[in-house]
Length: 201
Ligand SMILES: Nc1nc2c(c(=O)[nH]1)N(C=O)[C@@H](CNc1ccc(C(=O)N[C@@H](CCC(=O)O)C(=O)O)cc1)CN2
Ligand SMILES: Nc1ncnc2c1ncn2[C@@H]1O[C@H](COP(=O)(O)OP(=O)(O)OP(=O)(O)O)[C@@H](O)[C@H]1O
Image (tube, rainbow, N blue to C red):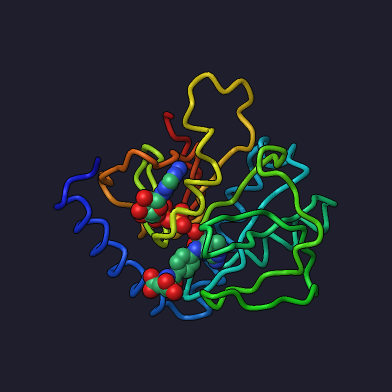
């Protein structure tokens, strides 16, 4: 279990980094997301991926629009998270640019959840980050949605490595060492505006 001081660190880190994200200019956000896309395009893991989950950004998160556009041009299927806040449950739903969106309880757009895809049949999941370290530990918005959804990935005897969990964030979101929690699911890699970081796992 994380100690009380670890929990305080997580909470204050979350606040600081969310604030910093919100203050970024739209131009800075767009440039950073183009730079991150260039890093991702170099990776064979991404070129091979057919079914890719992304997220629809909110409050200064690193944008995903150029990535979604690229996926559509290459005939990759995109999916975005749809949450059930009461059950703290998350599923992935097929998404194309232009689909009608409804705002969820957090103000984040979600498509009509008709075409769901099982999380373990996705090839790659682009994971939103508030903070990360180079070991692949991640701090998110605090709902625990990704950790619950991919809890099976923590089991070492998982035969399949699917899906590849790839964090997507600004390089300033890197911290030296994040205190981890028992339920945290480590990332396989992280893409920032500067680099692709392969995590040890
Ligand atoms: N763009 C995006 N979509 C995503 C996530 C994400 O991090 N980014 N999620 C990643 O898990 C899930 C949503 N998780 C979220 C969890 C908390 C808050 C949030 O703003 N919490 C408020 C409290 C609001 C409340 O409880 O009603 C806060 O912390 O101020 C937002 C999203 C699924 N979709
Ligand atoms: N596999 C799980 N089973 C049950 N509860 C879980 C699980 N994973 C996370 N949780 C709960 O979710 C809460 C939030 O976890 P945490 O602070 O790590 O969220 P986060 O990773 O920042 O959020 P998110 O994944 O939504 O971006 C924790 O209080 C934890 O109890």
